[in-house]
Image (tube, rainbow, N blue to C red; front, top):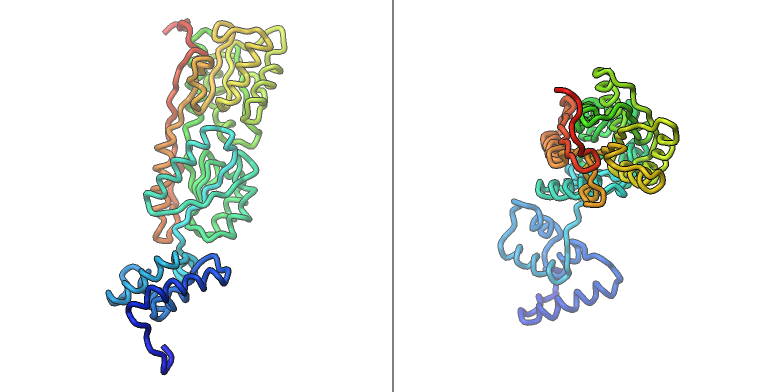
Length: 365
């Protein structure tokens, strides 16, 4: 307080606070600063900072004045100075892509809820690719986040090395690339491919096809690998492969190509449910085939529409909850600044059989 300036009478403090708030609005400032709060409360700026720092030493009288002024000015302390000082933001970047797929939307919701429970806020970063994290690495490097999480895969060792230079945990779903800072949490895609091969043979199929996701998709490649391995082990012909893009239209068009012949496959495994639903519509509406009487169909992800009565798709349910919990555990365990450096985590998928494969078992036990 400057010399010669008397403090405002107690009954004038409310009026002074109102005039200070009006003056702040008149300046066009969108947010009040700690300086504004200090001026209104009649305290130093450091007192404001101490008030909003947990455990800092400040008198009860000062705390009360600061909180009253902050409430009148609708002041919220900025996280930026703390981030610059501590190099810790409690922000987790979640890279999203392919949100047309309900599976990714559900996983995003679980991630957001779980990280908030653990005291972290989520920063969404959109990736143009719906299956790869590599393209958004330059953008991620510019954020001060404590961890990066993505349901998208990391495709190259070079990309993983670049992420490792950030020295924060990076957890990616269904990726084959890892290092001391990059960890992988995956569904057991190979085992799922093997299981659906057994199911098809048990239901009487003798010729097979697979509709994949994009060529770079590690998850799709692993599902196909397990499928082909098991068919080979039981002496069946290898599956024909059609290429899709994880979308309904890709499955529809790929099915038309695969079944355009004199001896169409008797069973079709698709890398995700959207592909499978598109394929089912092509088989029924364009080709006049019956499911499951003429063709067995299975997908992957168990999105909500897979269980609809008009679809009834046999599929694999990824344990998204377990995958999210494993991911959060890795992030929390790395808060001491040390890399996670753990082996890839693999979570089993559950086969859900519905009408698209539901016909009597024919293979002998």
